[in-house]
Length: 206
Length: 206
Length: 206
Image (cartoon, rainbow over the protein chains, first blue to last red):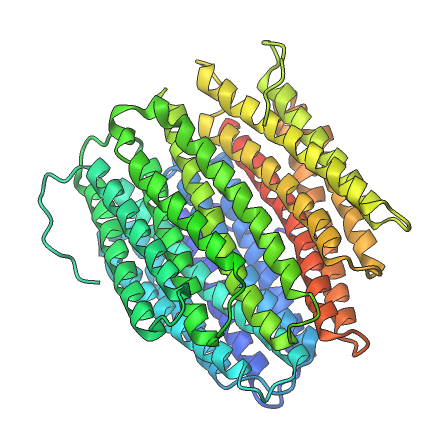
């Protein structure tokens, strides 16, 4: 983890937006990983870089909390939101790693739906972060939409599981695919945790 | 998630008690799901309703925190307890969903023991919530009993796992049953998290 | 859980150090469990004792928070660190229990590497706890080293998983070994949570 030069006046809001943009990148790489004919080694390597870049941003936030006398929200809330966003990246990274590791050639079609949900979650999170500064009370839509996406992801996850036990799939293959499906579902769940932490900030500041 | 009319003077204590009563209902539905000859589709549908009702109560608490100037405990603690109770419901809902999804006909007998533990956890939580108002210092018994139940659940969980690997059960069946058993254990563990959050409130207020 | 006599002037720092020493003991017992020709029943029984002793220390901290007017850090942070350390012990205990329960005779060689990582994590945590009192700002090395160990553990975990699916291992054996490997990885991850909570205390106190 190297710390790059960073303009001193980047605000917490800028840094949260930067974290969310890393998530957009991560979700896109996950989509690449699932694409027909993907160079999985190359995509996994790009994902590792994206995850390190996200780590840098997380640490920039922690350092900034450390060196700033007056923070826009409670220090703990800044910390909780930053680590929530970081957790999403870790889960997406985990999914990419498992796909590479297990060397599964054919993934269930519904996994692409899950990755689309993740891409959408990442996009609306990136759109929402600047509102932390200007319009905290308008974050309700973000919270509701993330919950809707999480519910959709949950239904798709169950479809994937049902498909794995259709009698056509070998036990060892079931174990691998279930592990990948669970990682995708955890990534979506972690977005909901982020939404809850944003809501908690809004509750406090209201 | 529709928000029903709710008398404006329902206190936080009333709302926590309401959440706990949803848990009693959820645990009872889980027991129904395991019963011989259960109409699993109907029970799972009732569970979904119960889970939505629990969500409504959770949101009523969050809205109440938002609109109340003086809260009986720290806002974060109210939020943490409400989301802990909500998590229990989610885990029980997950167990019901997996039983329906995997269409397992014969469940290990010890799973009924786990559901009895969950029913007991839900009941003592429902009994304990009103004490948040009047006798925080008497919550020690609640905390101790939930820990005892969690330990009992842990032992039963291990018995279930040992049984799955007795050589009589097909690998795919093992994967399904283990998933259900793990969901039951997580539900019990989440009750312990609730107990810890209640303890944390008691520690602060003492 | 019996509460032993404890000198009244044991400080929070002493108690955190005591918790960390329980973790050193737990990690060493885990190493014993993996050793060739181990008496697994005896080691698992010793682990249960160690876990109970760790519980006692955790409760001593909670009681001390309860009865102390001025605490060195925020009460919630003391509580969070204590429960983080307790969680590590629970995960190590879980790994020992699974090894006993599943009665797996041959464990992958890389599992010993994971246990060495856990031993090292426990040792540096035991070294770091006294610094909570005197040199919070020097904890950066602890945080960095725990993160390095967590990354190493992550790589080893992936090697273990890859090995399980080499085609030489029966599905039921894969399920058991993966469960043990996952418990070891969670124990390592929980040390990272401890490091994050220490960092959060340092951030606040700086």
